[in-house]
Length: 233
Image 1 (cartoon, rainbow, N blue to C red):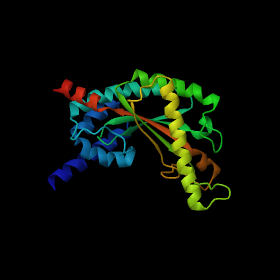
Image 2 (spheres, rainbow, N blue to C red):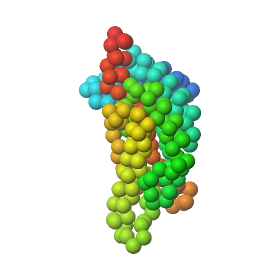
Image 3 (tube, helix red, strand yellow):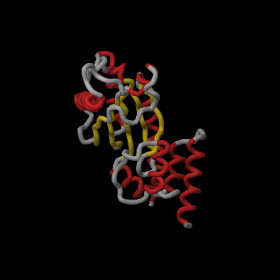
Image 4 (cartoon, rainbow, N blue to C red):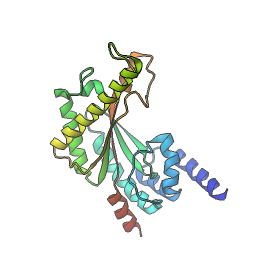
C-alpha cells in the first residue's frame, strides 16, 4: 500500500509538471524519480502512448531521466520547424519524454490513396533531417483513418480496407524517409491502426479530417537510456 501511495504522489507531481511550462529536463527528473517504467505506464495512458518506448527491463532513474529530457528538448525544438507538423510532448512506456509529430493525411495523400503527394515531400525532407540529427532516438510511425465506409463494401469490409490503407500510408512515409537516408535500424515500428484511436468525433467532416493522420514518434532508444544511466552514476 505504501508503494502505491508513493506512485500516486509521484503521478500527481508529474501531472502538475506536465501542465506547467517546465522543460523536459525537469520533467524527466521527476518522472525518473517517481518510479520509471511502472509510473510511465500510468502516465503514458493519460498523456502519451504506452506502446512507444525501448524495452529496458527496469525503472529509469532520475538522473538519466534528466539527461534524456534535455535531449528531447532539443529534438522537439527542431521538430517544431517542420512544415505541416503538429508537434507535442508525450510520455513513453518508460515514463520518459518523447516527441510526437502528427501529419494530416490530407497533406500527405490524396483521398483513398497511399502515394505521397509532391507537396508532402518537402515536410518529410525536413522530418528526415530532424531524425538524422537525433540518430540516438528510435522512431515509430503510425497511420490512422476516419471511419467512413468504402463504396459497395460492408462495414466490416470498410474497416479492413481502412486498416490496410492506414498501414500503406505509414509504410509510404517510412519508405520515403529511408530513401532520404534515415537508417532503417532507427525506424523500429511501422503500423496501421485504421479507424482505431480517433482523436476527434467522426460525426463531423472536421473531426474526420483530424482522424485521418500519420503520427511519427521520436523516443529514447535503449542505447540512449543506457548511456544516460551510465552518465548519471
